[in-house]
Structure formats: structure tokens, C-alpha cells
Image (cartoon, rainbow, N blue to C red; front, side, top):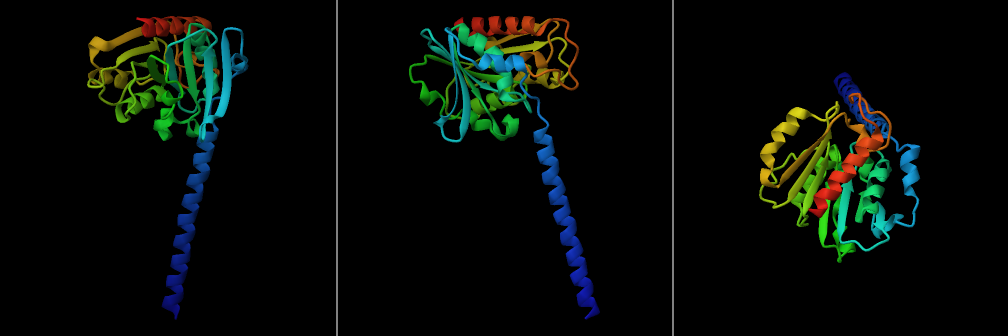
Length: 255
């Protein structure tokens, strides 16, 4: 009887330990994903339509998928699907996408699960079907979002004309995908892993690869969400980095 009681106690203690570990892991995860970078007031100011750009936030076009669409009011034939950076509120990229829409590019900003594109790599699925008249499709993102957008292109049946990487790189081989690639990053970026970035060059057909380095730019200035932990100190303004980014993207899609 005593042995049986000891076994029962040991089993109970083991179950308590396991449940405690599980509970701590769950709490830790929710604390982790809850501590994300919020879009600042400037980003929110670009969520209002103007005579040149219609801004639509919707969850109706694709079931279970929240999108913010920046649509030029003039005619357009090019579109850019955007994956946000890791633990960054997706609306933080509204200034960039709004300004691209002003230049005649339809931009579709995707809200990914828990603000982590790695949990939602197929987030772009179904988007191209919404706009059958688009001639040229581009996809990309910032930081982790760019990594995951590249993986989506490689693993899906969707065909894109180009991938746009902002302080990002592809972790998969894209040489057989027949896709043009534009890569931008700042010299003061303290977040992007430059060693992995350099190693990623092996994943590209370099005849289709374009790189633009923003002198004085940093990691966070591709969005509008404040300073990012471990980022470098920029020597240019956020508006300057944004302007250079828009110019390079427009040139890339129009070439």
C-alpha cells in the first residue's frame, strides 16, 4: 500500500511539474508576441484616403485574412504584396505603401499571425486572384517578412515578376524561380544579420539581382514604429530613407 501511495505521489508531482512547464511556456509565448512594435501616429496618418490613393482595411476579401489595400485612383497594372517585419504591427508600413501607391503601384499589406510572418508564410495565398487585370506582380517585405515572402515564392504555385527585400534576404535557393530581386538595406542597420545576408548571395541568379545600400540608413526606418532594439544609429532622417526606398522600388518595377 505504501509503495502504491509513493507511486501515486510521484505521478502527481510529475503531472504538476509538466503542467507548470506548459503553463509557463504558454505565458512566456503570449508575453513574447504581445511585446511587439506598434505603428506610430505618423503611420496611422497614412490610413486615410486622398484624391490619389484609396485606403481600404478589410477582412472580407479573403476569409480570416486582414488586409490594408493602398489603391491608386488612376489606372494601374502593377501590384506589390507586402509581409511586415517580425513583431511589428503591419500598419507601421503604411507610409511606404501609401507613397508607392501614389506612384501608381497597387499595394496590399498583410496582417500576419501574431505579427510573425514565420507563422504565416502562406499569407499571400489567394491575393493575386482578387486582381486578374494586374500585369506585373511583386512580393516582398521587411526583415523577417522578406525572408518569409521569399520562401512563399519558392514553395507556392504563384508566379511573381520580382521580390523586394528590405533589410532582408532569402534563406532558400531562388535561382530556378526566374524572378528579379531588389535588395535594400542601410549602412547603420544593427539588426539584420549581415553574415547571413552575404551567404544568401548563393541563393540568387546574380544577373537578376539588384542591390541598393542606403548610406546612413537603419533597420527601423523602413517602417514607422519608433526605434528598434539593437538597431544602429542612423545618420539620415526617416523621410530620407523612405524617399530613397520608394525611388528604388518604383525604378525596379518600372524597368
